[in-house]
Length: 397
Ligand code: 3PG
Ligand code: MG
Figure 1 (cartoon, rainbow, N blue to C red):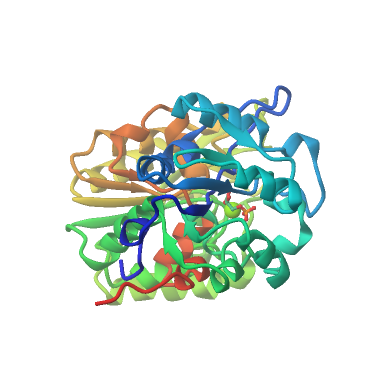
Figure 2: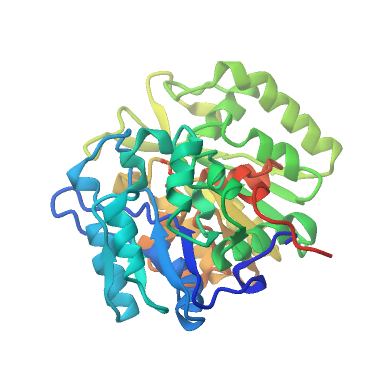
């Protein structure tokens, strides 16, 4: 990585404003954290700063409060969890800027950790507002971006802040960029990308950018329907991106030109509705009834995909294979998760719902790497420069 990290600057005794992605899932009723992976992932940076005697000021968003104070989206449960994990008290402020926050910062000693209130309670955060970034910058001497999952966003605490403080990468951002960058630059072959999720449009740049690097593309999930339609199959009531049919044709032709094996489902689960009560059956793709929709890949497809993946040395996976939230449509997604966990290969899981599935199945530690960024990892692998990374100080050669 060509950016400076927290290891490259003096942090002892300094006030370090660390942007983290503590946008963790909360239980709707109890408000407790249901998956703390994103907190765990920032521990290397936080512990490094504690050990080095820095005064750590963490800031994050939680959910999408749309610029207003939403009681349910306060950072209190995150502070509580982080305190437990670190075994030291993490105080949480009632706002993220202003005199009270400045006073709390003044009271910090080397090794202390403070967590600021949800930064998206201020509408100016998402507007990349300069005055807001300046107010934040007054709290600190240095800025550390460890929020990989938000680095695709030009927000004040990600981009504008870097105009007012020396800005370096945290250890999670470094690890994400090195790992994801590694599969683009120097993957062990055969290299497969297993892609699913609802939309082709989310994955086009990734498909374009990796076509010259992968040996094999396996396409399942909702997006497979658009590919099947582009090959003139009946797809029933499945959601089709009509404006992406030509793109799908183009991608399939490009795969042939590049010698990339592109596997689509040969059988699918179809259902009359997307619900736990739905009537479902398995059909070959030649026989998709006009009044049903695709909800998962079928057993023959699972076998075909598994056979292909077992030959691979590197596998990148992003996007579920079907409507996995509903147990009877989750077999395709779960089979892929189990299969990847069993491989003796480099297995890299894109963030978002794919990471959630793997974590929920307690398979995360069986994978080589689980990214904390959904859109951020897709953007990066799609060849997009992440504004939050771009803005950091370059490493001097
Ligand atoms: C995420 O969960 O993808 C990141 O925290 C970014 O959140 P956002 O999509 O609300 O910007
Ligand atoms: Mg997102």
